Length: 293
Image (cartoon, rainbow, N blue to C red; front, side):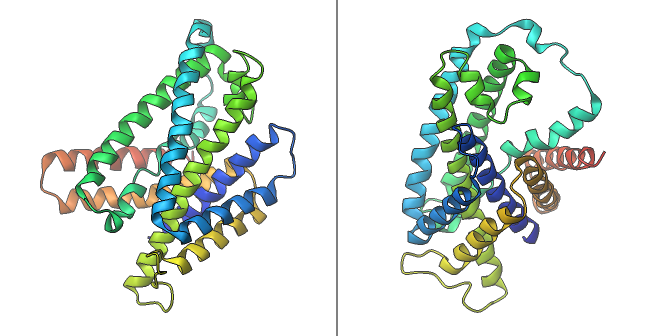
C-alpha cells in the first residue's frame, strides 16, 4: 500500500511535469507554478465528488484517444522502412527505455480502487479488459506510425514528439497535437490523484487514524485528497524533470505489482488466473531487474 501511494504521488508529479513540457512547446518556459495549479484544481474537483471527476475523465479520454488514432492513420502514408533500421542499437539505451516505456501501461488497476463506489462491481472486470486491449492497440498503432514516419532519433531529441510528428502533416497541427498531449496527461493526472487519495483513505480506515477516513457530504475522502494533492504538488518543488520522476514512479509501481501477482498465485486455484499471475510476476521482475543494470 505504501509503495503504491508513493508510486501514485510520483505518477501525478510525473504527469504534471509532462504537461509542463507540452506547455513549453508554446514558448512558456516558467511552467512550475502552472503545473502546481493544475494539480490543485483536480484536487478540488475530486473533493466536489467522484461523479464530476468521472465525467471529466470520460470527456478527457475521448478528447485524447480519438485524435491519437487519427494522427496514427494520417501518418501511415509517410512511413519509410529505413526508419525502422537499425531496430536494436545500443543495449544500455534499450534497458533505459524499458522502464520509461513500461510507465504508460501502468495505472489500469486504478479502475478497481473505486469498486466500492461502483453500482455494478462486475463492470470493473469488463472495463479492465476493454481498457487494456484498447490501450495496447492504440499505443502500438501510434508508435509504428511515429517511428516509421519521423524516425526514432528525431523523436528522441524532442520533448514533444506528438507535436513534432503532427507538424509533418501540416504546420498548424503541431500546436493541435500539443494541446491533445496536454489533454491526455490531464486525464492520467486525474486518475492517479483518485488512486492516491483512495489508497490513503483505505489505509487510514484500516488503521483507524483520526480524521483521514472521514467523508465529505458528497462521499469523497476530502482529507485524503487534500493530503495527496499537497504531496504531489510539493514534490514538483524538488524535481520537475519528467524522466527522473517517471523512473521512480515505475520502480515504486513495480514492487506492488510483484506482490499482487504473488498473492494471486497463492489465493486463486483457477489455472488461468495462476498462469496470468505467473506471467505478470516474471515480466515485472524482469523489468525491475533490467532497470538497475
